[in-house]
Length: 319
Image 1 (cartoon, rainbow, N blue to C red):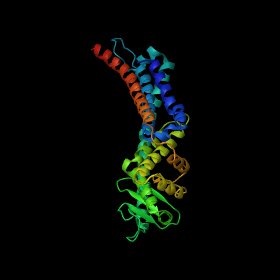
Image 2 (cartoon, rainbow, N blue to C red):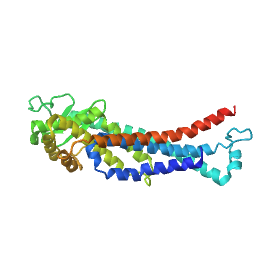
Image 3 (tube, helix red, strand yellow):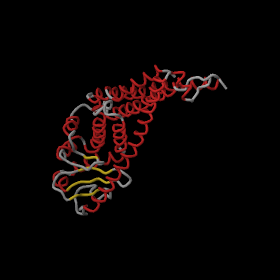
């Protein structure tokens, strides 16, 4: 393990946390392969975190300088004598920053999970109390146990993920949409719930909050939010076709939802409707994206494992 290894992983972490997401967020091919693109985004995020830790641990490994018997020493005085005080301080600071980022990442995951579930629990109680659905509605699926209808004229449709899932519609949705369009909305929202897209968004939110603002990409979370909507759209299209879904999305374009919920409408409605009339999924693009994701994950892992295995072999050789 040497300083070159640490530098390579530091540069890789910076690239995967900033420039690479910025470039990928401007690409249009994910519209034709949203599932593969989502896998690629996840691979980039994992590799960025992994590379950042690898860089810090590589620096930390340099503190284990050989002692008189050839074994690595952990005595600070011996390390300072071998490295010099300035270099020793630099290594210690880098290692401390790495451990700090790790602690912040764990804290962010816990904080986002707890905060989001508290919001959903409170809102779930509210929609259960305000539910005005009845048995006389002509729309299929409205009488299902997980559906709640709110007395609001504005077309609103969203879902609340979790153990007690809810699909929330407004009176405005039932008034303005046809049977097939309501079915498209229900299929869209239930696709979010079935695929647990909320967990993907929670992970990216936590990573986004953990990395320093100076290096993280502002576009990564937004791109992933769009991709999960595209995946839910594809599920609805398989059931009702593109036209009912497009009409439903336009109607619910101004739909609002509480934080922690997944709304059918929103600022990406225009892009999603235009995509419904465009080319469908591309197998070649999907294969290329999956291959790239695998390379991004596997190659750094190999380069991290090899130096540590060599170090372990060296330590065992001195026994």
